[in-house]
Image (cartoon, rainbow, N blue to C red; front, side, top):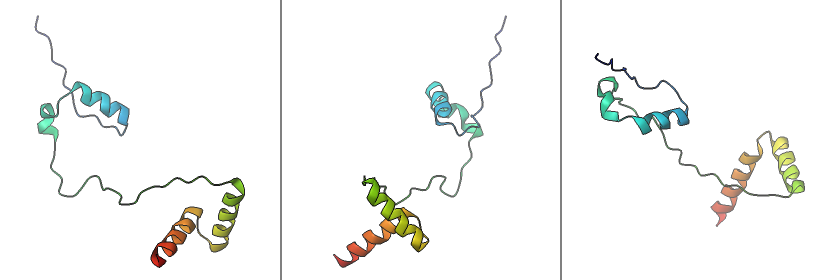
Length: 89
């Protein structure tokens, strides 16, 4: 008796775990007919970098209060301060 071959299609998910599991078990060349060429970048790298700083609660509260008074969020206020300091340097 002949076995039916199961047809596998590219996954339609955004789950990193599901995609990783799928590509661990499959080869891209098996799906060439389902692939399409795109003219524009699919992933755009962000040129910004994140910096995590630890502040005592009192300083953080003061930062948030100043930012609120200026109508901006706390990270924007810190970015402004860093820009100001670096432009003087």
